[in-house]
Image (cartoon, rainbow, N blue to C red; front, top):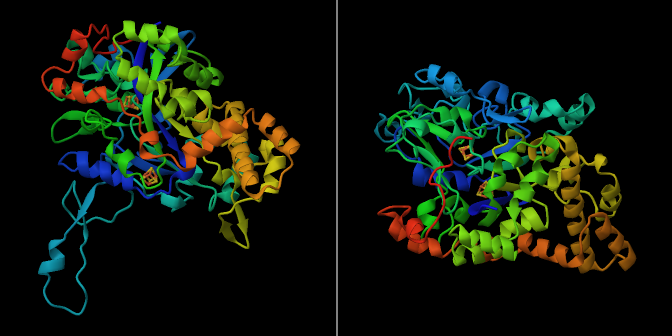
Length: 506
Ligand code: SF4
Ligand code: SF4
């Protein structure tokens, strides 16, 4: 066992209201500079939809992530030889149209226009050409299915659906949508790191840091070859045209190191975000990323280790993981959602980067109802829910769509999640209105493979967790932050860490 610690995250999608407060907080702190106009380290997209940059999930187009060839795992982008031949012209980058043409407004017109019959307006001006521009796309252009004929109907996940299921979704597309906020997943098998040609001559241009697994770019070593931009299947590494360096989400590590949650987590209006430590077995990364599609989620869960297991604790300590880090992992809300309750799933695991941001799939769009042409937020009545537990194929949004997003096509995994989410809802309602015989309740819980204690714990952490229960941040990092100003690894060396600074090419 090679036990390491990783800062991990859960986003509970039923709670996201699509307000974009997270995106704006991140933009204001980190990417409000020249050269970063097109960067949204945090973005929120509507599903079904094509996302940002448009069609990012289509790896035939962008060549991101890993592919399994027989027993071998290779980057979809290219091998070392093609990296060298493409080094001065990387053909697999999103274009400005696929991001969007950044714009600002001519605010001076509001103050300095001559007197006239009409109110002056601030015209949008392209930040690329500095000329007036008609805005035709943006990072949240397909919000709430605006222009769904262009966006929702071209969602790459629809390819896995039958004609009947596609028609079912199309009929619902005005109502059956949900939001997916996305940041860098700080993956265990990061394609961005593996693809970096500077990593050969100058290791550390992009690296996964030893103490907590955050994936970072060192601007002093980055040469701007942009292979990380192409290789990341989530398109969460960006190129700064002004500095000639790549940039990406840093999970607000200066905030984490001083005990604060990342900005997009802290401001989240829906309180959908959770953060904590997971312990994992790094010796099994390659094996985990190489299993068949249908087994990816299960293998991903298996690589995460029980932080209370004495063997795991011993191996973690032997690797230099601090006591504080281990006790933080033992209180992790992420461990509960991902491993104990098996409710949170990785986004598009078929790209095989082993993302460490997990999502609880939303219940509302699969259950929501329309009455008299209006969206009924109460959704289906609870008595209609009970039979659904037995036949999930009658849910409003085809489960195959959810399986394409969260389980590499394995519908059984998503079914288990939905059974439990529906059971939580039925149980908590019955507790309050006391309208269900005990025997029937026991049957429902058994069908969902859960218990009253587990349901209450899920309900608590979903509906009314405290700030400290949502964000369990290791206090030790505050001390490390002071030392990191001199040498980020000094603390690790002194403590006898055996971590490699950089995850090398596999
Ligand atoms: S999501 Fe982040 S860590 Fe994963 S491949 Fe993309 S940039 Fe790298
Ligand atoms: S701030 Fe929270 S609720 Fe609002 S869009 Fe972002 S993730 Fe969703």
